[in-house]
Length: 477
Image (cartoon, helix red, strand yellow):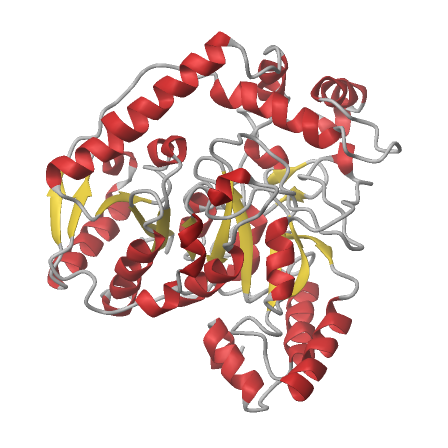
């Protein structure tokens, strides 16, 4: 691949100066997909190709000549996770064979935002089925419809991460310039970090949830997965906006004026106070811990103060996601066309039993636990758990520790610190930190902040990315 394929800004410069066209970019990515996704390395990250991708690219090339560009994503091929509605000739399935014939009747808000920005939605990415809310035994990246996504850094050996597995593997494999993933708890941070990519899990409400097959309305969000921090900022700028059909996006309407790319700088780490709960580092092996230790030293060299902190630990099991999943998925399935075989969670479970050989390779224990709830959000157990979750994760959790130590961000490896900010609805960003010495396994450095602090997190991550002692390595397919 030519050097200017490495990031969106370089691609846009090549488009502007005539080195390439959106059509040529799209065809190049399609060729890569043909060579390495279903054969060769067989990464299996792409669930479906947009049959109109080349035509869309050609139309954007023509628009560029006649009117100029819409913005930095004009003509850039992007892949979206297959739980995001697209009102075109592609299915939306959440990786389930039960939805293999499901076409959404309109774009999700995020898909609409991408099209408005001039991006070419080149296809849908495979994922962990039902965004990893189906079975505790299901491996990251597996779905009954799409099969197993592999990590391009060591196909079949390294965990690909999930649930936005295909989104990350596709970007790492150069099957698209960038991707959109979704996260409820770790589903962007996990695959991005394990595929040596940047992933942003935004504040819940920064990006509309409309048209995304739900797990938990209190935790679900979509976000970018890219090769660089600047690319992530560019995509995030395109995704944000107030959606009249998603009231969460109006909670802080001023956020739509944020231009995250303008906040990127190489002095953000100077005097920054970053807290690390070393409990999360205990899950790493010796070589992975060495990568994070070096990343911490790199932060310190740039003027950051890294402070040991202790986040509160709760042993309480929350019922929130089970209640919200049943409520949300029933509402989504009810809108599906009559020919789709499932329109409730109960019908989905029955369908799986009837197609056990193909649908239940890893069981459906999580779906069955969700079905046991009454599906009504008036349930006292649900309401009390939700209130307790908010208290423990926000006021008495991240907010309290952040205030006590006057922190700018929290640091953790990969997705290991994702649960508390997921419950709180707070943002995180992961950026490549390096690779283990023996195997070359990618390790990610993750930073978490308070609500709507995406600009600060992106800037901290950008400063680290530009000055880290390690060099980014693309996988060899």
